[in-house]
Length: 111
Image 1 (spheres, rainbow, N blue to C red):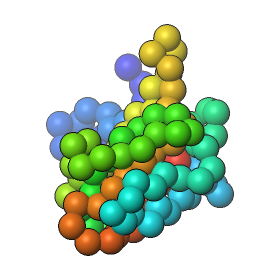
Image 2: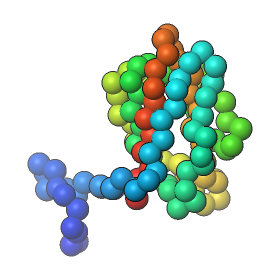
Image 3: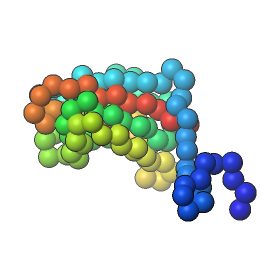
Image 4: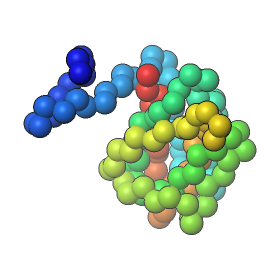
């Protein structure tokens, strides 16, 4: 199979996406759930997330809210997250709540 993707040490293609221009988000994560103010573009299917500190995440629609029982993301960690598609639907927002201290969550839409 021919591919233009970069390859790992076993010569297997690495799925690579680029940053979508003008589609970076930052979320101030505190003791109260917060989410991105602007919905992800309709054609965005994956986001890259970086947490400056530990927090809990939940993806969903325009009213999604995170709680301390949601998915834990350690500080200093990158996460690549699918927003879904097709019959299962697609998430438009990401909500976060701090694990201990206020942090910033950086979200980049990928294409």
